Length: 300
Image (tube, one colour):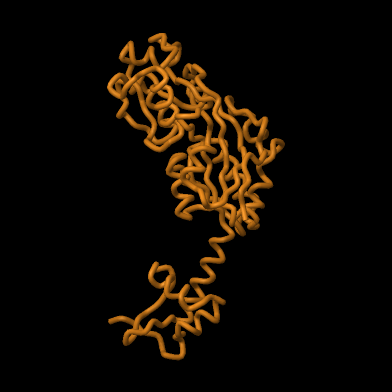
């Protein structure tokens, strides 16, 4: 049996529109998208008042929290943990490390309030801005630098195979561990392969995929792979050898309509060299020379 609240607890579409200060068309859109509690009686949409009150409360609470999507990064995890500790219980930070490209696409679909990314444009060799313009425009956004990271080849301690380049890995048939498709590290690999005229078949283990930098290092540490591409810190963590390949720019992307919100500005206040430097003291491979600098600003 379906429970239907008493009639005095139900609101019409017009009453709900007045309560939320929206037009009725917007209410119908919320119903179609399944985003608002409703029932249908005799072909008419009705809205249980108690359920609507709870829905409003839940949405207000969500707006106080921070959701970051995009690239996997240990320093970002530390920064978000600091934010959550110091703002609990009023605001908590959530981090979904789905990869740079997927993070940008999630942001374009209004999933998450900001995205951290280090996606290299293979045609220009520039980080982030060319890809963002292709995916996010005409939506407005702000790009702020978080830090730079040293990316390179991670190999076993002592580098027993004497690997120095991606070409060496291909020539010596070293077992490679790759990163997930859509990650900035995977894009960097594809960029390097193009420059060295290498194909997927040339890299043994190209289809051997890890979702994080930490997982890449673990596979090499346990000798499940000979080499992989990743950030310097994870090599240091497991005393693996590291051959620098490229210093990459790691940025934060915020939609223009969210830039001025209190939760975003509260988080932005943490992106200062004096704060980030304390968190990165034990993390080699990070460069804070532009931390907190706005690199692109196209907002409302």
